Length: 355
Ligand code: ATP
Ligand code: MG
Ligand code: FE
Image (cartoon, rainbow, N blue to C red; front, side, top):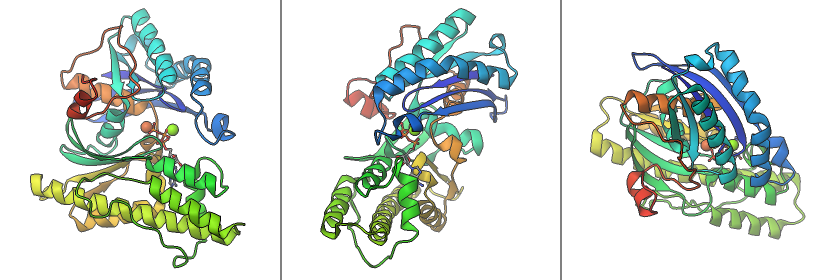
């Protein structure tokens, strides 16, 4: 089964062709991503209007490139998949209209995919991870712990009650005068930091809800920065390290609790996996801490390659392939984009958008 996937929910325009073999394994035949980073850098964050306009001008070319590179022509494609939410509405509309037009013209089935489901299932494409497993999604727009029980079967165990972790990195970088995106800048600066100089609280430590919170931490950094002004390079590095240490400890605490709950419910004799996804998973300090925690709890640590952890269309095509293989239905051409769309059925129903 060969699927053409399209992703335009945020600031990456992407197209890919992915093959699902009868034995359940996957193969990426092409994977093209055009990041809009430069477009938004001057504004210190993603500007929705600019993002949508850029998707419009580049998507056709990327789809053509993905088809050409895959050597599967449109006639050979089994379905067209597109991110239909959650995300920025303008970008979602561009992707949906393009995918619908292609599917209609080529007379192919059409599938709208939840972006989060794409992130959730990527580890099965790269590492053939078996259900059930735990997913930690840490990106610019999301911070969630999700129990992945099967295709279309998810339980959200925790989410952020304020900022997403990537967003917190970006805001912290901005207030310290570092560039955008902030994550890599903070990580780099933290390398030269002095560990004992500033100490920040660890958000949500031991809180039984498994949720996250990062905005208080960012405010604490702002206050410290104001007290220390004008900021020397050393002080910036020290603050970055304090911030990174504190968020790492918070993730460690939340994940260790989640792993314990997973073990209580499913056991861990079969060495189940903790899968990490999202741009923040690139952070070496965070990665090392989670890897150690996972090993200690008797789990396997799975981190798909970074280009598949951040936004891409291969994960969208793959999610569609998994859904179709599981016998789930395709969508009608009147499918509407959804800016909000929790993965968890119960959470989705709670905001009146259950699918
Ligand atoms: P979403 O996928 O939720 O729609 P997004 O497109 O912003 O949002 P990604 O592209 O997965 O998310 O990740 C980008 C985020 O990851 C940014 O907030 C960036 O600062 C953060 N990030 C990238 N590298 C690092 C790093 N080394 N350390 C910490 N954060 C990082
Ligand atoms: Mg992105
Ligand atoms: Fe994403």
